[in-house]
Length: 451
Image (cartoon, rainbow, N blue to C red; front, side, top):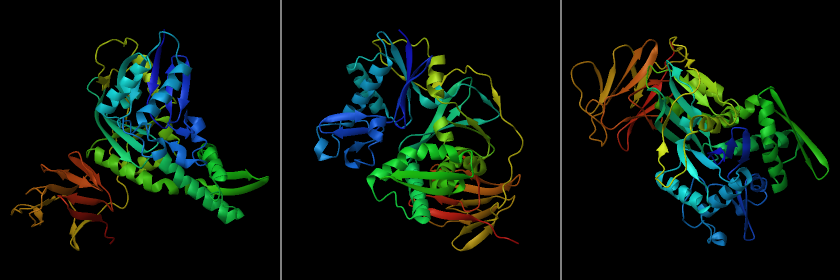
């Protein structure tokens, strides 16, 4: 009668005990002539039979019928039930109970539905814990921890408080920035290398496209330790070879990485030092950790494989399945030693913005704050927007230079947006950033004038 830990993340649904991982399969389902095949077996058919593949049923958990008319008798809840039953059957023994790590993309109605499915399957759920809280087992002294993980379809950022334990403050979901989108970008880049170097197009047939997807984890791992990745595919008795620079794989992922960094910067306030805690899945993305370090700053902390389920097992031993309501736990005590983050002043990046550009006029940025709003006053430096636009306050926000950094501070009731993301009170600005005020919005750009 053991305690099992289930981590819900459709990039890999996993179940562990204190002795190790018992189940780890992706959230793919193949609908095959009335039968359902889930996990890795389905993923290995995803490029061969794309019309029969479903891979958004965990994030889109509901009782609505699947959009495909051929399978209108099925719902995403049916697919979750099928994979959950398979996972539990393969991992559990009589009398076992489970505690669940929940991703931030699952809403309260989805959690209720999940608990209903578990009850129908006879799975005793002892508790549910936010996944970022479950994975965070230590205090980050002098810093604000942000937990970073990827699902199939999104990147998940969770900002944590540290009153005397790991406590969830806020989560952000970056859609279309998950493992699937990155894999597609890398497969296109690798395919281009084959076409240019061997005149072989692996995207011409489903068979070879599936081969690229299957070999991709091996090539990504190789890129972490080598400047050049050797590519090879055997098709119809012929071996095809190519090479790709590791930096090219990072470049292919850059648009997604930039979106993650942009959202991270909006999640952090000016003057805060970030402790960026990456899961093993996030850390395996070539160049992601380095990109976030360069654009966001702070310190990087890489978690070991299975850190989330280990965190559950170590701190949820006393949870028991019962007849009462199960609430989502958003706070757990630490059980590991504190990590001390350096308090040295933040490095001032080269190419800091020197001017704020609005309506073709460049306003110099210095120690005297520039105030933006709809009703200018005689004191200080102002940019009078002179627009009765919804969502613009009379004294909306200000921009100034402090300790070599360009700072944005929000003074409004409505919020100020940096690169499309609402800031949390204040933020550090970089060259090329775009600030938006109001709805539909007034936009201003940060630029650098040389000389």
